[in-house]
Length: 258
Length: 323
Image 1 (cartoon, rainbow over the protein chains, first blue to last red):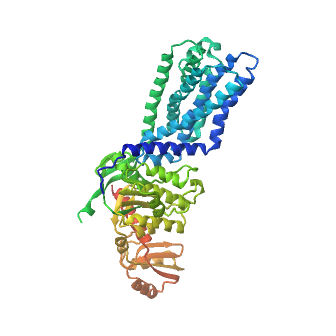
Image 2 (cartoon, chains in turn green, red):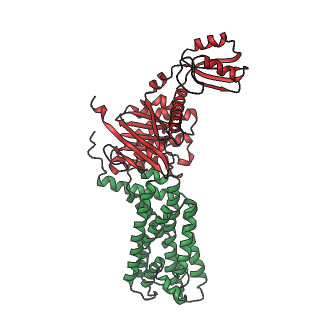
Image 3 (cartoon, rainbow over the protein chains, first blue to last red):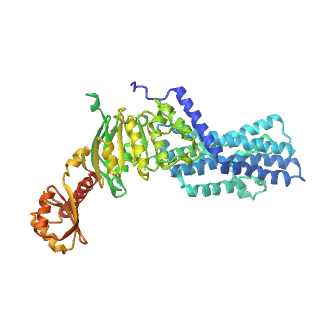
């Protein structure tokens, strides 16, 4: 036997990433108990506050909330599928069986990111349809597309944050910890009420929260942001991504050796 | 042949501590290509720790381990091994086929799906999801995952624990199916018959020490005596006096007296092992020891191992007492 070639070829590696993502998607979308709430939660919120409650006001409210509930919606599955799901996989030995195999860590992370992105696409498609038909939101095609693109890419820092939680926290605690971060952070970042209506010190505090920067980027497309330069938001989100990716890869290594 | 002497795993004076507890104590061991080795021992003897250390999941405190000359846990080592972990799990809602195909992609020289289904006896259930499988079937899926990369070493950490007899036999069949393909197999187990049926070499672990090793036949030869047991109405002193008269210096030590050793007297029941049961019985009758339910059985493999384990523990205790 030729043992000198004990590495995957590039095409084998590509096929591995594809099947890892495919299996992850199958696994996730076969769990309606996770898929339905993840998708319906932000849509329901938007229908209530962005459409029904905003009926007698101008369409600006619907447009503003489309951006912020979009952020809220895509953040959720990223935090949960990385946070809670990874914690369960870690505690129930589903991660261990992969860690002793030669699977590259990146393939595992990649599959999770693809899953989070798929959710982002589904949630945004529904939200945008609702906004167009019921919310009477009027945006140019470029604005629609730019919002869509930002909402996709903006998921990444939350994948890293979720992953850090999932690899550090016990399975029973993970969902609670994610909620504890997800809901207050969403509120304090102005996803439900614009930050401009916050007291001064809370407005300043918002600048430290990743969803604030994420939402401001989407709002900038519509010209409804607070006026901070776009590159500051991008830098802040990048910093969060890098910090939590480093944190997560350390936690991954620690979980592999006892 | 020269090739069969290739050393796959080289463990040199390795110690592993968990906090203050010594899990592995100064253990040295070489495992050759194609060998089937069983690790036997009670819970906490260090079997799983040893496997996890070879896999690179436990850190070594002193000593060194090389696997194929590589560092444990390195990518180069991982590609050439397959493992059934004790605490591993698979997602409920993925089918056997999907899971196998996923893991096949992790290895450069994977077995075909067809081969895996045949070797692990999974034909006919490949479209089932994991949560629809029986315990035995699940364990065979883990086995298929362990061998899907055509590994040179297969680690099986208590693969048949919790399985009923028929499921266990089926699992053994799976191991037999790959045994002759040249891979080394390292098996930890509580079931002595499993070690006896499958292995070339048996290692006995006790409190992190490798206390004995040899072939299953050697273990049996180590203990060729017969087990003699009976009930008696005689008081304990009479029985103790009887055994004392056989020449054994002290009934409570486990020295290897030819006529009777491993003597156990409890509530009117007497058990011992004898190399010469005929002589022992003749004496019992001559002394008119009242007895009923007399039984003479060949020593079981299990008894031999248990006796050795006990002897070693006693020696360890004796040593400690001296020190």
